[in-house]
Length: 126
Figure (spheres, rainbow, N blue to C red):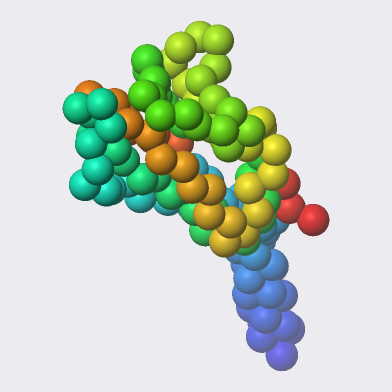
């Protein structure tokens, strides 16, 4: 009976250790970037529609995307996405909260398509 109790206790500890903090279950791979050419030409440049969705169960803040030299021939609301002073990264929603299932949308027009690869964020679980 003592051996069964030890095995049960070990299994319980294993299960609890696998649960962990929800923030450990989230990462950059939970930021899904979907970009499509919308078919419009603006001043001879292709227009793109970008959506960044947070699939993490937690809120992500200070979301940074790789976007070296990002520019657009159409106005983009800087409170949605803005190029950092280093010219390499863009910040979503002024570094504010991107909650679970939030989809941040913007359009831009330029001669090249930018990657907007997520490179960093802070995870905020409550």
